[in-house]
Image 1 (cartoon, rainbow, N blue to C red):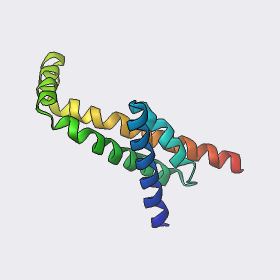
Image 2 (cartoon, helix red, strand yellow; image 1 turned 90 degrees about the horizontal axis):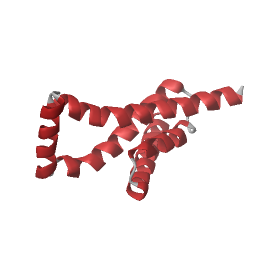
Image 3 (cartoon, one colour; image 1 turned 120 degrees about the horizontal axis):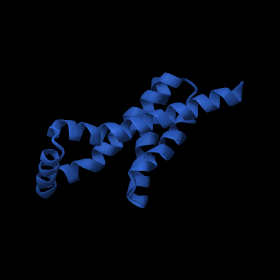
Amino acid sequence: MRLKFLLVIIVIAVIYYALMLLLKDWRTVIIAGLIGGALYNERLKSFLAGLIGSFIAWFVLMIPILFNEANQKLLIIFSSIADFPLEIILALIFLLPTVLGGLSSLIASTIRRILEK
């Protein structure tokens, strides 16, 4: 059972990473989450797998961007203009796609459960 959970996390992360590289759009996390959620019946585990898988892929994609010195300066300028702390902006950068991946996975597993009944 634990192996299936890890497998779904890896599937979501790989699909999201590949779609991000091909289509260059962060909203592809919805597609990756739906595919990952279709592999699970349990809603909580499906949500967690989508959440963790999309976080891993997004983190790997964002590391080179966030460690770029020019981008760091841009984030500091944006946080001063928006009057938000830099930590909140970084949290939102990681939180939005991650939660969207988890919710799309949850939706797919819920639809699968409904269709099986």
